[in-house]
Amino acid sequence: MIRSALMNVMKAAAVKAGRGLKRDFGEVENLQVSVKGPGDFVTLADRRAENVLFEELSKARPGYGFVLEEGGIVEGADKTHTWYIDPLDGTTNFLHGLPLFAISIGLAREGQIVAGLVYNPANDDLFIAEKGQGAYYNNRRLRVAARRDMADALIGCGIPHIGKLKDHPRFMAECAAVMKRAGNLRRLGAAALDLCFVASASYDGFWERNLKPWDIAAGIIIIKEAGGFVTDADGGPDMLAKGSVCAGNDAIHRQLLELVRSAA
Ligand code: IPD
Ligand code: CA
Ligand code: CA
Ligand code: CA
Image (cartoon, rainbow, N blue to C red; front, side):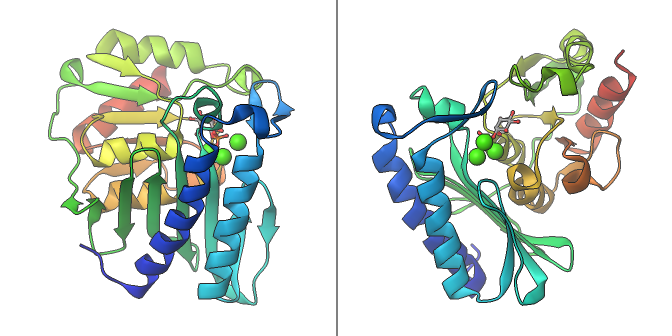
């Protein structure tokens, strides 16, 4: 298990914000739902959770910068550390009463992600990782799946919501290419959790484009520390900048990348 002071800070903030999300889950009529764009929502629950995370992390680590989904960039006096925060990943699931949503906290030091936490308060699922210390689900050490044959693989993906489809013209072709070769395909609706499901060997692989740094910063280090391979959808290291990910063990990552890149 990871027992660092940093992880304690991250856990305490996530548990506190998670209490609010748990309370708000199922209370849609009181959550002031607003529309950011077609198919893209934000609620009072997202904002409240973000405020708690911002306050708690600022108190514990004064000066660190923030990249917040709802609040944007907050520069810190300490230019070497940046938190990437998604206070509620899976807002659509949350609004529909599907208990697949999570808080995602990633920390970068000098541009490198050094710690990640993804917490689903609906069922107390906690995924954590710190650079060089492994990845854990609750108290269990994580290891990506060993399956190497795409025909047996369960692959996760992200379906762009209606407002984002135009930014992803290749999506249908990519899906078709993967569906022709993979054992089966899933779409769960919370990218931070999707990445953790690669780390925990529930998924054999996952890819998605048009994501934001707060969706993936934590999940990336959790996969790497679980022995997985994760790159952007072009096979490079620029996941945060490009907002795309492709992940799995070495063999599934290589095959999935090939399928996604050659889809037309
Ligand atoms: C969304 C989820 C979803 C992904 C979307 C994200 P949000 O995050 O991660 O799985 O497909 O692209 O925007 O808005 O629920 O935090
Ligand atoms: Ca959102
Ligand atoms: Ca998100
Ligand atoms: Ca969110």
